[in-house]
Image 1 (cartoon, one colour):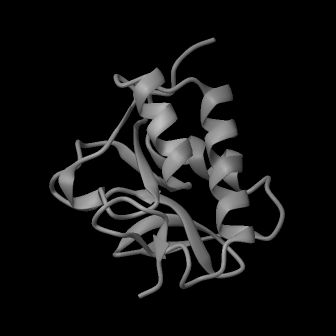
Image 2 (cartoon, helix red, strand yellow; image 1 turned 120 degrees about the vertical axis):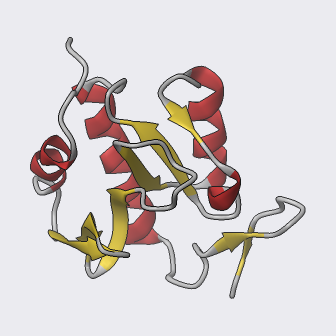
Length: 129
C-alpha cells in the first residue's frame, strides 16, 4: 500500500467520512472537527516538521504509536503536554491514517472538553485547566 504524499487533501477526504465531522481551521491551519471540537489539524508550531498532522489522542495511545513507528509518529517539546501525536504525512499509509483519524475522532467525541486539555507535569493523567 503506498504512502500518502499529499498534504491535507487525503486527511480531509478520510476524515469527512466520519459522523458529524466538519472542516474548519485551528490556529489558521486546516482542521477537522467533531461537534465543533478539533481532532486533527496541520501542525503549525515551528517545532513541527513541514507536512505534519497533529491528531488528538490519549497519552497512552500516543506513546505506543511513537514506540512502534518513530519514523512516522513523533513529538516535539511544544506538544508534550497536549494529548496529541504528530504524524509525518509523507510516511503514513492510508489505512494507518484512517485508523489514526478514527482514534482522534473517538477521543474527542467521548472526552469531556476540559478533561482532554493537558497532562500534568509528572505525566499522571489529565489535568483540568
